[in-house]
Structure formats: C-alpha cells, structure tokens
Amino acid sequence: SQKIEQNSEALNIQEGKTATLTCNYTNYSPAYLQWYRQDPGRGPVFLLLIRENEKEKRKERLKVTFDTTLKQSLFHITASQPADSATYLCAGNNDYKLSFGAGTTVTVRA
Amino acid sequence: DTGVSQNPRHKITKRGQNVTFRCDPISEHNRLYWYRQTLGQGPEFLTYFQNEAQLEKSRLLSDRFSAERPKGSFSTLEIQRTEQGDSAMYLCASSFDRDRANYGYTFGSGTRLTVV
Image (cartoon, rainbow over all chains, first blue to last red):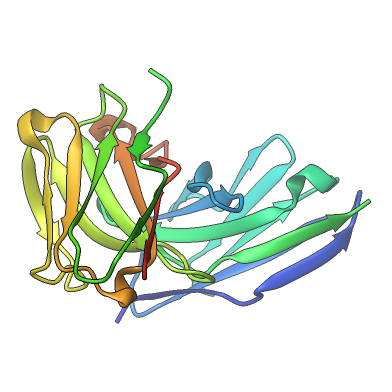
C-alpha cells in the first residue's frame, strides 16, 4: 500500500541552526507533496506545496525539495527560532486524498 | 470567514452512546474532508465530499460511522454505538478545486473524542 514515512520522530536543534526533515514515499508516485505544521491540540496548518516537476520551493525561512529519483522530500527551516517548535507533517496526493506521514516533532532550544 | 470551524472541541462519551460532530468549511470551498488522528500518528483519511455528494469512504469508516453534507455547506459526522477505539481527534478540512495545485487544505482545530 502507498506509504509516506518521516524518518525522525523528534529533532532537537539550537536556535539559529537549520532544521532538516526527511519525508520518503513508497509504492506510489504523488503528483504533489505538502508540508503542514501542527501544534498540540490543534489542526494542521498548511505551509508549502511542491509539485513533482518542481525541484525546490521557498517561502520565507522555509525550503522544500522534491526528488522523484530518491522518492524523497526534504523540508528545511533556516535560522530556526523557538517559535518554530511544533510537529511537521508531510503529505502526498495525486487527487483529493492526502496520505500523511506520522510527523516529526521539532524542538528549538534558545 | 475565519476558516474551518468544528464543534464541539471536546466530547467525552460513554461507550455505546451516539455522538455527532459538526464542521463548517470555508464558504467558497466545494470540497470537504474528514480525517481521524490518534496520538503520535498523522491524520488518516475517512471520507470526502464534493459539494453535497459523498464521493469516497475509507475502509476505516465502519457502518457505525455516517457523514452528511446537506446542501453542500456544513457537514456532520455521526458515530453510533461508540467504542473505546473510536477515541481520537476528528479533523475536518476543506479546499477549492482550482486552488489544489497551489494551496493545501485548510483544517479545522478538530474535535477530540474520548470514549470511557
């Protein structure tokens, strides 16, 4: 069955450093990969979407890549801040249905 | 319009009782989705509406679950004869067709269900 995997459950980094999160997909080829932020007790909030024919996309301090050869997306938070502490979810889709990974919880230490 | 609204935010119910949740999507959005999320996991797809038509139901959605979207506006998710395994966060999301290639889905804050 199609699967989205986020390798790390947790990532702890020092303020100012770059956080890099990995998302791998197996048994299917999503046309889109999306990244969401989720705070405790809240719903996911959309951050970025990248299409399979795009290699990289940026939004402020966020950068996402899509490598169809490696079947992988990388999500970077540059110049990280304590306010970036949250769980980040990767999701893939071809049409309307999103398949989510389990998420990576990022903690940024001041 | 302030986004996707879900009510109630929290629900505690006894096993065997019926519960109903409501979702009010963004008014211009024609697509509405229900997802379920348990602790430490990502959201799992339950069902999807395009306008008032329910187009797909996940195998996760047993016959105790039913969802409606009358008139293509708000949606309700009902769980009959609740079981402890139904305890989870139930998330609603909405989107608009033409935005799909550029924007993600807008999620509500969810309804946290606890079955005791």
